[in-house]
Each structure stands twice: as C-alpha cells, then as structure tokens.
Amino acid sequence: EMAHYATDCWDAEILGSYGWIECVGIAHRGCYDLEAHELFTGKSLRARRDFAEPKEVVVDGWTIDGAVAGPTFRSLANKVKTAVEKLPKSVSFPHTLDIDGTPITVEKQHVKRLQRTETVTGEWYIPHVVEPAFGIDRIIWHILDHAYQETTKQDDIYTLMKLSPNIVPVDYAVFPLFEKDGMGEIARSVNQQLNGKTGIVSTYDSSGSIGRRYARADEIGIPICVTVDHQSVEDNTVTIRDRDTGEQKRVSIVDL
Image 1 (cartoon, rainbow, N blue to C red):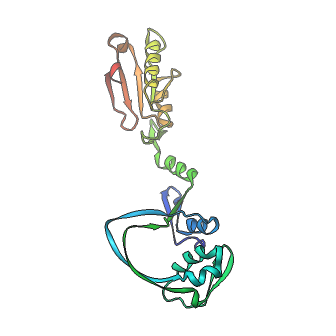
Image 2: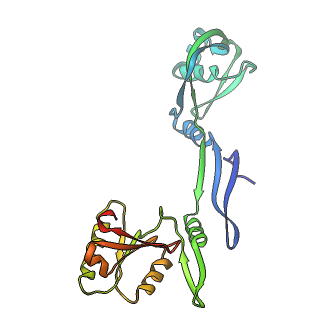
Image 3: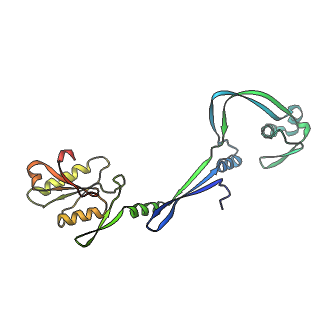
C-alpha cells in the first residue's frame, strides 16, 4: 500500500548481522507536490526545457469568443480563457470550470475552436519529486556492524574496527615508545604536525605498553599508528603501522 501522493515506492535495505534491515525509504511523488502548490497559490512552479531543434506543433482545442464571453465573464475573462484553452478538444459544452474556487459555467456560445500551427522551441513542465527518507541511525549502526571484527591473540579476544579511512573519526594515533630521552617531545611535535593538515585528525597516547596502545587504536578504528622510538631521536624517522594488515615500516617524519 502506498501513500496517496506516491506513484511508486522502494526500500533500500542493508544486510547486517541481524539480517536485512530497511535503511532508506524512497517515494516517487510524481508532480503531486508542485501541482498542489500551483493550485492553491496560483503561482507557476514549472521549469522549462529547450528542444534541440524547434518543433512544429498543431494546436487543436478551444478558446473563448471574446465578443460574447468578455461581457459575460468580465474581470474573470482572462482566467476563463486560460482554463478553456487547457481543456481537451473532446470536451462538450456547457462545461463548468473552477475559477478561484468559484464554479463558472461556460456555454457553447462563449467558445470557438482554436486551430493553428505553432513553432515552439521548448516546453514548460512540472518537475517530479523523488523523496528519499534516510534512517541515519540505522546506517551508522550498519557501518559499525560491518567494520566490527573479533580475532584472537594469545588466546584472548582481540577487537578490530575496520572503518574505511574515508569516514574514520581519527586518522592517526601517535605514540612515543617512552616519555623520555626526547621521544615524548618528538611525538608531540609529530601529532601537532598531523593535526595541522587539512582534514586530518590525530591523537596522542603515551599511556601503557605499546601493544595496549595499538589495541586501543584498533578498537576505535584508527587506520595508522605512528610510533616514535630511540631511532627517531637519531634520524627523524618513525614507525608507521597499518591497522588492517599489521604491516610496519619506517618513514621520514617530513614524509608523513
């Protein structure tokens, strides 16, 4: 069952650990919205599109006979004319129009046939509306659901959040191996350098063993960990560790 305004509806679902769950409802509302606004405001909400080449169009319908209809409808004559010219050629008269909420009866003597050929370069149309309704909480839940992984390390459960680097809240974690011998100062400088880059968020962590710090970073999905050690003091290089592969390599601080 669809809403009265919809011409079609679809649901977008995501497969997660709890099965298929709807995350987006999409309604094709057709021209219902803008047509209704036009009706009640009397304002045109149409868009125009131009043809690649001009077209010859045969107009075959009705218009008012001004000499007869003008005195009859007076100030409403133009609105009656517009309404009559929208009627199909198969309409019969007398015919009742709704003009600004008032019923107006158009008799046969008020109208005449309108037949002509026009050259048109484009057309006015009422745009259709496609309405997607997102459940952002469900989408975020599924992102976490898909990213969450559990493995074992030394018979203990090890948690890994494999979030895409495009959406992680924190891009880098910077660790000094120890808070001494200049390693802490270098690590804080590296962290500041990374945070100074546009779109990059880096965090500093010096608490606990290096293994525990890696584990904390993996749990919240940080893709890259940067470790400052004794060698860093000597040659300004650091170890970077990839969250997903565990691969480690040395790079120069200036290349971060």
